[in-house]
Amino acid sequence: MRGTSDTANASPAAKAARLKICHLTTVHSATDPRIFHKECRSLARAGFEVTVIGPHPQDDLRDSVRIRSLRREPSRLARMTRTVWRLFSEARSEGADLYHFHDPELIPVGLLLRARGKHVVYDIHEDLPKDVLSKPYLPKWSRAPISWAMNLVERLACGRFSGLVAVTPSIADRFQNINRRTVVVHNFPYTDELVQGATAIPWSSRRPAVTYVGGIMIQRAIKEMVAAMHLLPASLPATLELAGPEILTAEESAQLRKDAGWSRTQYHGFLNQPQTFDILRNVRAGLVLFHPEPNHLEAMPQKIFEYMGAGLPVIASDFPLWRRILGDAGCGIFVNPESPAEIAKAIEYVLTHPGEAEAMGRRGQAAVLERFNWRSESQKLVALYDEIGNRPCAA
Image (cartoon, rainbow, N blue to C red; front, side, top):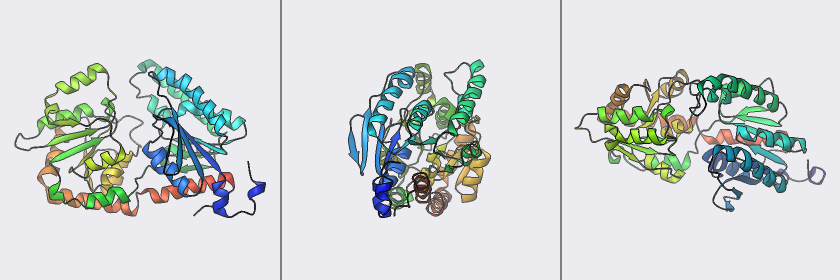
């Protein structure tokens, strides 16, 4: 690795500062909450020199992390060809010691960088073979063979990489026997800004509203959530606050807005993290109602833990894993995500039982402060880098 002989007798902080890290993404924003706000900022604070290359309006420097911007392409095909090649060219010119990529479409880039003698880490956000089985843009007949092929590609490639970062234990289990440097780094939230802001607002000051934050998608029960709002009593002045990118066809979007429940829905569009947290601090429950598809059953969405950190009870799909997380913390209500009637009943309960709703929120917040927070996860990430780079852990 570059600089090894020159830094043999240097302090741990000096060694880390000379290790250049470059995060790569074509799918996510360069300021994505996991990539930038958690991983890159934590690594910069640990003393590494950190750059992220990804979609962003312009080159930038934030929180000691350098951003090199990529232009977003209008189509998926253009992104997976022109943008990927452009990113590879930018990555080569960066001359980093370790590259950390976040999208399956960048596996060829990772292999090319590895062939050039670079350390490469693959951050696996989704169970790709299961995810493919639910892709609405793929013909149903093609999903099983594509899933099989993606599983084969990942397994062949992942043995070549310097390390793997999995967002859930179930994803990590797929690779433990392929790459010994496989670690789970959960997508748990930072607690300071989220929890302090939430505790500053009395429960009685919160609006009679519930929220869903994330991709507006059929598979994440957007139709059922909106339909549930129409089933609430007319005397209950409730609203559904939506925030996130709309991932719907034009026909799906038009139909959603024709639903009677849309009159009780406020769509805020895509929000940055402070704006999102502002919504969480002013409502009385968070919704996470993924459909029971293969890639959802073992998922651990960031929004679950952000809702908990904001002191909100969570109305969630009745999945065994989510029942363990939220049920053990005493902060969840579980429903069939494909039943607007069950969703409406849960929303009505939360809004008409403020004392119990507030107590549930406090229990969830305590669990985030105790267990489900980013502090321990960042330490695992830095430890992986230290092992790969043979560098002592930076304070």
